[in-house]
Amino acid sequence: MRRSRFFEFKRMDFKEVVNVISDAVVVMGFSVIYIIEALLRALIPRRYQRKIIKGEVALVTGGAGGIGRLISIKLAQRGAYVVIWDINEPGIQQVVKEIRAFGGKCIGYTCDITDRNQIYRIAKTVKIEVGNVTIVVNNAGYICGKTFMNIPDDEIERTFKVNILAHYWINKAFLEEMMKDNHGHIVTIASVAGLMGTYNCTDYSATKFAAIGYHESLFTELKMHGYDGIQTTLVCPYFVNTGMFPGVKPRLLPQLEPEYVAEEVVQGILTDQVNVTLPSSVKYFVPLKSWLPPKVSWSLMYTLLKGPQTMMMLNKYENNDTYEGKKLDCEDARRNSRYEQLTDFEHISSAPAM
Image 1: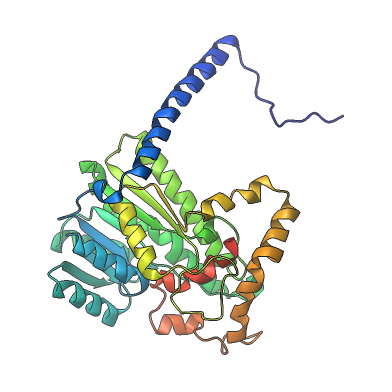
Image 2 (image 1 turned 90 degrees about the vertical axis):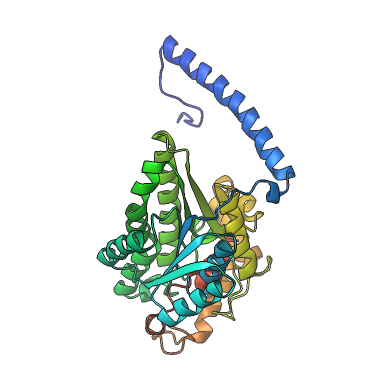
């Protein structure tokens, strides 16, 4: 009979066992403290927990439109000097104008974040013209929105460059100064699609899974090396009602409004939240995919939530074999400089995850 390995551990000598028990007692002690801290933070109004960001330099990628624009405005209203990176030059100018109209500080740069050399070059320009960036909001994102066999190879590469590889280049460009001062904040806008695979988004979901893993690993490295002054916030939103794909509607939970999502992102920065899952109820459902038998998980997604069916609604805007019937196809997205508006696609990417 095969032995169950569920509770099987490696063999340890007496000294190792004592060390493990000792460490477990320490963990339990700290757990009590941290749980009490979390409960107190939940009870204390957020306005009493907010840090001051006046004078901080905040970079927002994809800040010319969508939620990036709203985040930029809200950070500027809090006194941050906002730096916008985008490929939509008219959009950049409009947001800069909006922010300066109420007395905020803002500057914009045209930057294609699929180009690593351009990222490093413009980062140097920002340091010279504005100063060291202390808040980085990796908001820009891209999606093609096709099933696996229909996604062109170049679209897969582009999705990975925008949604994850750019995070490496951007954070590397500014993290060194943060580490010298042990001060800064890195924000990763991921997606619920990075917590559970999503129909019509094999490229997008893969990059969001990667973004979450990257962010959590970076968090670990910063903590292990003593950079407690550098905060990290991981944001995983569900459907966002941006109107880019009006036919895609979730069955149970309502779509999130861009204003709400942007406000929660900024509040997450101000209160140094490690994780921001929107809506918060989603984080209680996602673990079910690990706890429940696979067939039960699929039945839940397919029969009750109708996630795949929801995402299949994208097909009514496109022909089966071409991109021409889609309301805004991948080529149009590039021509119209729309890939930077992550949240215009967010409601697609996150739908089946709930």
